[in-house]
Amino acid sequence: MRRTLCAWTGLVLCGLGLCNLGLCNLGLCSLGLCSLALAHSAPALPDSAIARPSQQFGLPFAGAPGVNTWLLGQGYGNTTGAYRQRRSTYGNLQGVHAGLDFSAACGTPVRAIGDGTVAEIDGPHGSLPHNLVIDHAGNLSSLYGHLLKRATLRIGQTVKRGEVVGLSGDSQLTCISAPHLHLELRDASHQRFFNPVPYIGADWSSLALVGSFGRGYEYDLSAPRRWQTPGSQPEVRRGGALLNEFRRPWPPAPGGSR
Ligand SMILES: [Zn+2]
Image 1 (spheres, rainbow, N blue to C red):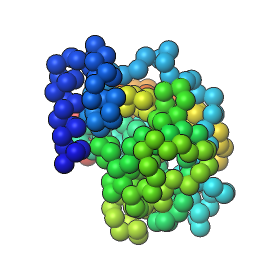
Image 2 (cartoon, rainbow, N blue to C red):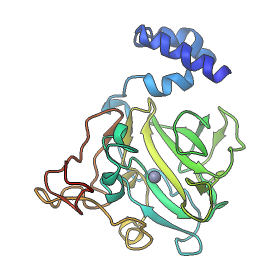
Image 3 (cartoon, rainbow, N blue to C red):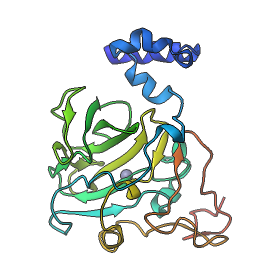
């Protein structure tokens, strides 16, 4: 009930433009009542407010990758899977997979990628059945999606890099069909989505060699080298135009290219 009330309150205030005047910070939002609504309605932060990538974060799992631990399942960005669903699942994210998928058995401990503060538990960010948002320095927020259970943390709690913050789950709720963690890196306004790869210190070239449950990245044969590696993927803006309405897609789009 409180969540519904806050969402509507925030939407009304922001619809009136009051948030842009900073009034939300003086009123309900300072009480934390608007946070859920603002998460999707605050203006995107400018580049100058956001920390640049310098491998300042770590991986969300401990230990070495492997078939019995965890593997990189789907990259961020212009993946073939996102392309096929660019107008549906990913239509509000410019047709792009706006996070990294790590395959892992249900119940695998998920670690905070950096020091931060718990901002949202099961907030309005999808990635069901459970999600978690941690705010970090530099106006960056990490989202951990498809968690097995509601995180046993509290809003405002500080966490350290590497601390267990949840358990990985399955987007299809079976624990045998699609067990994975969906990890996103956003600006604190939740309007911009960044490629986590240059922010996370890891051997991405090796990680990309095994474990993928997709076919890599979608080609536009008009520009066949664009967006083809884990590190060279576009930023996403919530609600922006599709980035991948390719003229000459490969693999071909179901039902034709347009
Ligand atoms: Zn994902």
